[in-house]
Length: 319
Image (cartoon, rainbow, N blue to C red; front, side):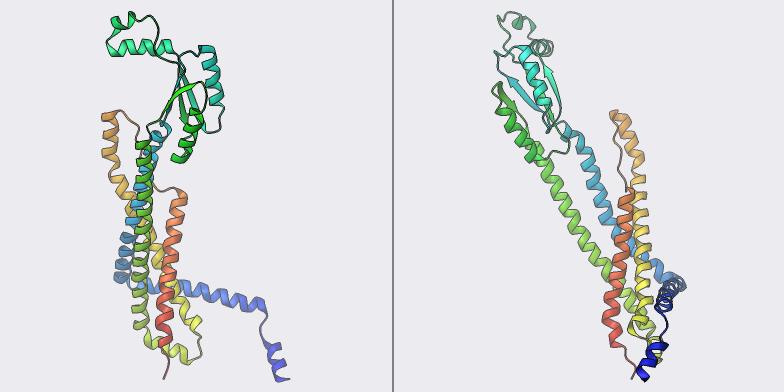
């Protein structure tokens, strides 16, 4: 009967949920206040986190820019098809249209044998010798441009299909530089991943050590709180939110460092564009990149504080 009465006296679920959420909000604000009260420690911790995260962020943007710059190279990885010498121009143009309709092909260009001979005459300097030829020795040519997103495997498959066409005498593609390009980019991406994991572990250690020192400084406060019946979860929340704040501010600082760094080299880049009459533009963090960076740093802050609290809080027990 007493147990039944006790159950009836429990507050409704809505009230308990409201109190639970209210304590989370209070812990969030309380942890921010604690950080604000120690500006020196906060600034140093946030600065170290920001610098640490800016390194993988900068490497990521570097690879992203290299990937963007190499987009033009990939789109210009053209396959040259030298057709049979006996093939007439009408059939050659029809073959070009068939190839252009392939799903793996972005664009094609037809170069007639007469045009090839004329260009060779102008560029080679052997005009008089060429005029003595009784027959044009150059074939019709179709220049095939694969899709920009096609990788090496897809380009090789396309090359094999084109080589199998009976009217194609020679299909030529310089694949060595293309394979090197993809290999270098893949190595760079994996390098960025490894660096990101290592520096993420460093951020965990930084935040974990900061929270550990905070727990030690509030040792007596934790003892008193446990004596009056507070649970570990109740005591843990302000420390967890403290880690969240450190991660959030550190992520913002890292974003500012990377953006300022790329802004600093934008001036020389503009001069380089003028000298080479090019349109090379730096790629910076997109909105998705920014959200991912801030979210990741915040989660790292939460994880680092959780590890520190789980390890050290259980050791503090009133005697």
